[in-house]
Image (cartoon, rainbow, N blue to C red; front, side, top):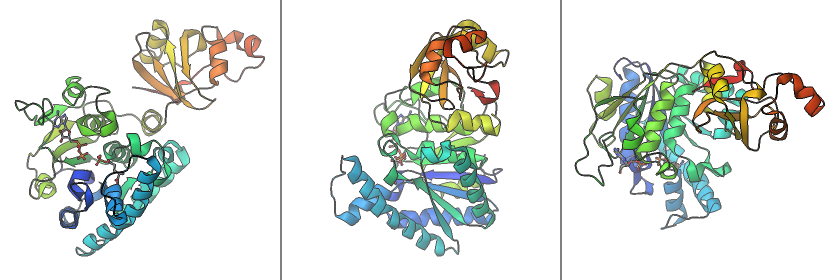
Length: 369
Ligand SMILES: Nc1ncnc2c1ncn2[C@@H]1O[C@H](COP(=O)(O)OP(=O)(O)O)[C@@H](O)[C@H]1O
Ligand SMILES: N[C@@H](CCC(=O)OP(=O)(O)O)C(=O)O
């Protein structure tokens, strides 16, 4: 996977760049820079997604315990990000490589214009042979620190720049049949398909550890990466020269193969980057119209509405059983949708006094999942 890949996103988790969560492990950073430099000499383009800002900020502030208040975590991230950027710049400089810092939020990527800007900046940096070092912009978000994990960020970046492979380095040898810390019989998987439904269960089941990262976010990240055709490797960052050996074709860790259909760029953006503001539940006929016939969603096929959304915002389309089948930009706000659901489009004007569109979600603005 990595020997044939040209463009690679590598994510190093908190455990690999910090000294047990306290300050940065400068020797480890130098090691990552050295390996990335070798990959660069092999003709590959590399983007590094690195955690570590909060741990470094705590060190600089002399804080021993990780704060719980969000504003303190954000302050620590602001202080620590300086150290992270300085440290990477110094380490890569030893290998005659320049770095660029990119701090992103989910909101940045959900705005189409900023998404396109981020993409052109990143691809320009790669053309200039610079190593982009990416982290979440922890300082200005409210949900990223609490729910944020750099696995998701790395997958979104993989889609953004259409990388060939995403490498997630962590403290375990790969993905196991269950958490190896808790189950000593757990076995490591060498190759799986991202479409295998058993993966989520192995990684801890939906909802069990979303907030704290773990394997679940890595498996979800692999699924996301596959939407733009990228394969994912989950491997141990403690393995000697792991990136270089992978790039020479050695099988290390777990390969998660992208076996799902690739979504076209705009649909992928719709599916992955937008924050869903609400849901519409469809009847079986509407589900078939969307999924099988590729049609737009009409109000008549909607049986339920939840959330709070404005016209033009993203909503999830659910089956009667509650499974998400599509995501799209809705033409009516939540109050209007509630009034016109279950009604023929010809009645919209009578009900609302005006009609914007006959479709609730036009198929051009709809991404099937
Ligand atoms: N099926 C599994 N295979 C491997 N590790 C698992 C599995 N399920 C849960 N885990 C846990 O996930 C942890 C790695 O996630 P995390 O601590 O978030 O790492 P990072 O900081 O590198 O993102 C492992 O140490 C392990 O305890
Ligand atoms: N953005 C945060 C870290 C995010 C995070 O926890 O990432 P992870 O390495 O996936 O556990 C930081 O730089 O401290």
